Image 1 (cartoon, rainbow, N blue to C red):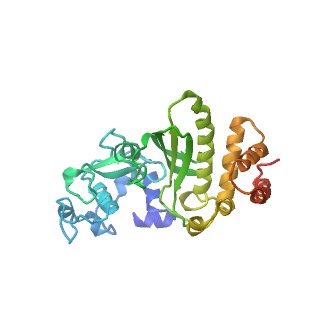
Image 2: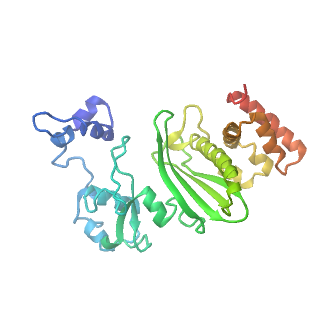
Length: 314
């Protein structure tokens, strides 16, 4: 099989995906089944050896190595077929077109990620994992929120690929906030996660505010995940600015290189939903901050110049 991959100049994952789609008329088997490496040459031994070595799968599933990396354990369990490649809760088993795998996370039934005994393990789809175990990217954050949605978003045209979580909290303080969990390097295989949090007491008059500000927050965070990581768009990469964020004043925050386009795209999306001129929305937002008038004027000038560059102003 290796020579086929080398001649075609494609990755192993790409070859596997398309080989499974080609059916041989004589045997009624796909190309992958006909030509897969039965001898196991070139396959990592730490994956396939079930009983040998210091970290044998038998010992792992007896709980002897509680600090063994969870992602490695998940990969070995799937490679060896110890647990079926589907969600243990809802039965989801659809494979991604991009890499021909089912997006599953390893979950620990008792909540203890160091208890690797087989009876404590289950595979869950992202939606069920989020609903049952919380945010997989930050399990200790905002435990008082109620998760109301979790979905994998794939747009091949942009292209764009991320997980989206929506959570609410009962409070008399109405608000909508967004967060993005995204690698900071230019290239990454990690799928980013956008989390939208809503605070409301459930009054019907809040719905319009929530709808408008969710559209703003979502577009804002989508802009961030195109600045680095898996969804980096050509010419848009921006390096990590976490140190600057930790010490930035409110004025400095509004002038961060990553924040200016995110703020502008978010406000532009909200303005379209409100059917307001974009500049009116921009002025409304800045005038509603608690910044000095001189600082607002400085930010306004820089933002308008950037908005023209982004073709947000005709």
